[in-house]
Length: 163
Image (cartoon, rainbow, N blue to C red; front, side, top):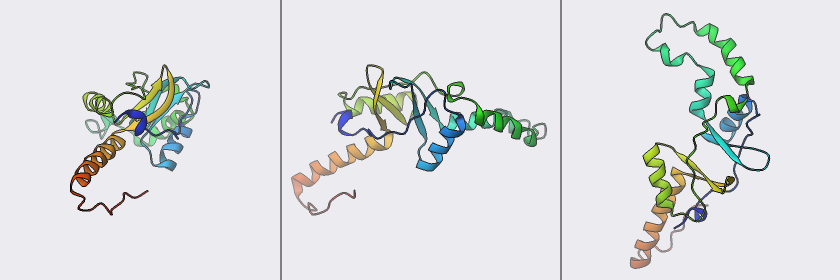
């Protein structure tokens, strides 16, 4: 099975100039954990994740556990508002692992596991053409396994996956 058979092609994206507020809104509204960052011509330049946004909202949170008494969480409101208005480019991850549409999905899974990422953009050259999540890979591998098993036994061939 190859990446283009499994990847998502209807992708929500943001530009590097988008306000972080817009990225956070898209993530929350569509219940997704990360967005590709692309230029006007579709060139992939980064990814912005929930974790990146959390870091932007609460830049002192890493120290909060050790310095709980010293951190003024009320002061974080101003930093929060400033971060919300800042451009995505200030917070996005620019070192992005990608795969091509004709690569095996297990290669994509190996990249995700090795680099501890939950999604990889699918590119042709530098142009974004899709997105592959660890969930997409998991579903595809399970489906292929079940199809192979069911094809051999026919025991529950009347069952169909939900759409």
